[in-house]
Length: 511
Image 1 (tube, rainbow, N blue to C red):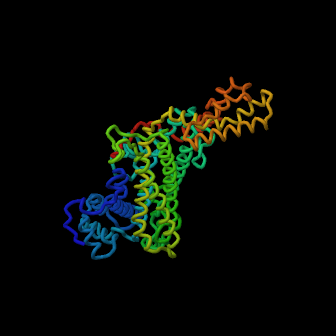
Image 2 (tube, rainbow, N blue to C red):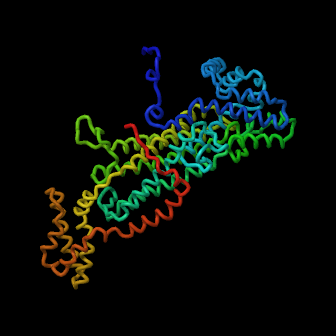
Image 3 (cartoon, rainbow, N blue to C red):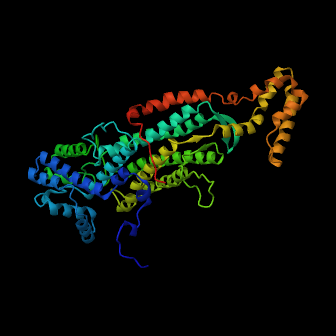
């Protein structure tokens, strides 16, 4: 295959997750610049803590490291890695080149996983912080503990995605809490529910996801300063057997990196079960979004509910009348990818030999960023959908009118019994008329005329004046409106309370 000279990014493969879908914030979070500047910060944290605990490290060396922390010669690093076949040592040499005074103490006592694993944990934490709102983000600036190196206004514009999706759906559920609609089981018409009650089914899953993601984020710890097999032997030697200083070093670096705790025991790496915990909750979110957007696609086919459709948007190149639910389709497509990514950390965790095996590395370079990037875009898209859902009550009413006579048969029987009729006789009458009406619908393509048949049959004369009341859709929705009100007040609104001030940002999508 002829490979032409590369002139621009258009000449090489780029992941669509970055080039088409994900936000700038999430794309930056897993970028090389974020990764390698974080490595340098970790080396600075280590040097500062080691100096504070008595090692011969000077203020000038630390100042030199801080001065050049952002100046990464990526070309030099790539050339060093080509020669050394070791990414961490390549960046140690590259950093040392611009910090000659500090060169002897960069990475002192550490193993590659000190920067590798700890940076991954920072990226996981910051990835959650893009998906979930954090108290430590102040209104006019970043907290000192927040390591995300992007402007606060950019972060604020994207930080509340999941909370906003829940908020939009909660408003939708409240608005349509009393609007009757056909319920479906097996995708066959069942008893009535309400449009708002159905939205609460979606909301309940999202609320579970929000709590699970928050818990996974809060459970994250730092790997800390543990050495090559997790025993801290190199640091114990550096501090001449002073265990307390080794422990203090671990604590100080953990705190500087913005974590409250470090894992007490590790191998060379932190347990890969941590990745399973994080990605399983993202995969669960993917399943939720897929279910919601599948429901919207089914309802769009019925013309009951539609996602937003732009004034000049084209649904089909060949069929001008089409209004394809492409946003929901995008969510389903990407959600499938998110769901299957959990297989990677599960298998990786299961095959880690003893204190570590390097066969985790290449896999995690793909599965960790892609999980967050994918979750990022499906939440953005779902927010856009929920901000513009369109309901067609007249279509919903027509569908109810088509099916409700069958559902009302039990009510008719009860009314006849109250009027002095025999239940068994009434049941047989209704059964026969229902079968005749069903034949008209299925075999002739006609409308459901059960009600007309009942009205024409003299047997039902005692209850004819009650038929309109017996067929009022609002009498078939049970406690749906009350369930909506209680669910929103007890489960949803309290969850959103901390984020109320930042709920007003809308998402516009490039289609």
